[in-house]
Amino acid sequence: MKPLLFAMLALSLLAPALPLAHPGHDHKTMGTIASIDKNKFVVKTTDGKEMTFEVIPVTIYKRGKDKGVQTDLKAGMRVVVLSTGEGNPIKAREIQYSAAAVTAAKK
Image (cartoon, rainbow, N blue to C red; front, side):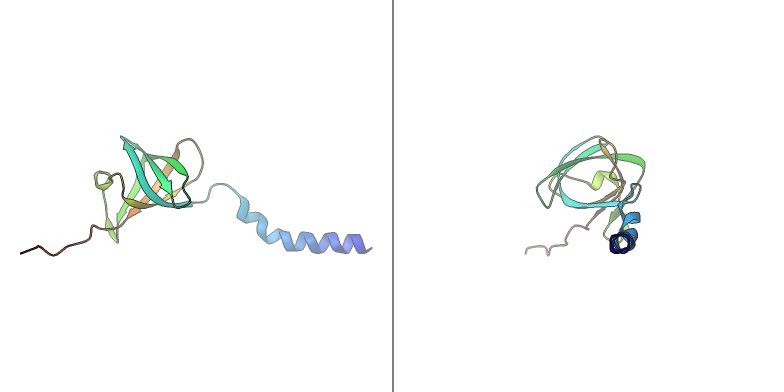
């Protein structure tokens, strides 16, 4: 009887975590653009890994809170990439980057 109760308790504790482990949801990758080549770019993540992403026709670019464009992306730029996390290369759904800092002109 005790093993059955223990098994039921273990299953009831694990059940809420099961939906979290499914594919198809967005993944967030933060890092710096290492290289860009046409519709593919490599991001060096904050933990030192390199990940290759593909820009697809539905990719959204966000420059701060404004709309951005693909030509804004440059090597060395810090980005946040939302993707499906599947495939090789991974398809980028959204690329977020900050607006360039405005510096005061020197006199």
